[in-house]
Image (cartoon, rainbow, N blue to C red; front, side, top):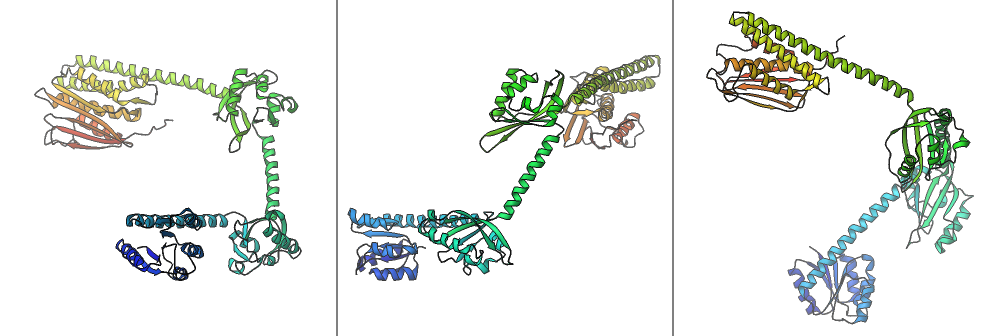
Length: 589
């Protein structure tokens, strides 16, 4: 609830206005009829806002009262019957928050009050924000900073100042004069500056050196930057310990010497250009590699040196334009010629030396990689030869497996016992499954892995053809993502699918119809293979995990080889759920 001081000399009107304000939810703290009374109540009650009539009883009018209490920073809205320009102009000098002419609408009065209150609230927030802002800057300038009053008293210091002098804030602020900090020899001159600065800031130097005497008696030479705070008689001094500055200068010099040493002794050739592309500096490696002396290339333009080193003019121009315009160039390789016309391969790392807004230099770091390239090409050729050899091996293994498959087929036709022939037929299918792996690797762009979806589709197509399965009678439903799988994993996984698919085709559908569904999904690095059919299911007295039948024994063995887990669901038909991860490649020695 906003608290209001009402200043009105007409009591009837004042009481009527008070009731209206109270009905709108405001707290009318008091009513003043005289100027002096209004000033006293404003100082005593500190209201949120004052509604002020300009014509008051006594010698003071409302405008005079508003000026008298301006230091309280209480919003004032004038309510008057005087609309003339002269009165309005006088009122504006006191910076009111509103001006209403009688008779006024109560609704407009409420709006004026709310706007004034909101404006004052925003001003307070802004003022607080600014105070915090300047306080933060003062405390974190990085230099010792002090506020000095006109009477030489130190009113405020930051942490850096206490560190510099050894005195605490409690010992300094409001208790010590700046003359107690500085050397007695410097005080007369500094007193003169102190007085002149308050007459006219231009009469005293803004920057000068003096000596500080710390709490423990140490004398430090400091650099001062002193300025007056606008609208006050206070000054602010920023103080820098010259000892640290001298150390910084020494450190900079040492850093420059270190850089020069690194520059001169670098293993790479380094050339420094200015922003026009002229060579400013080059190190000893440039002379060693290219044979050019410093005087031959210093001052030369990038285009000229490019031609000297066998680079085309247009290429040099394009590179120079990109560098000067500020475009970053990636690491590149150039083939350049030295003074003896010998070609050298370089890895170039261009770098721009720039300020915030522009490029001021270009640094080219040039690493001779000729020998490395020769070795790389040799290794590349050797690798290509080995890859061709590996592909040929896979091709030959596939052919050998095909021969084994053919021998099994011939043997099967020579056997009269149907059970033995069936066993040979199944063995032939397993060999064919392994042969397909090698065929896929032979055709793959990466000899270390195959596209497992393509492989499974080919495998199932082959199995269905071998067993002459009618696709309209036994349907095949596959859902396999595009998974790249290494041979270590693909081989046993393919054999598992071969065994399960063969078993389903032979035994699951005595009536001749049904569906086989195969799904392979991957969750992070875990593969989940689901193989199911809607056939008659496994015999009730058969435990698949302990079965002595070769097919299921092979499946169990292969799942163990995959370090996997297998679950079997017999609810509808037979469903195998096998979980496994990609097997690492084991190096064979």
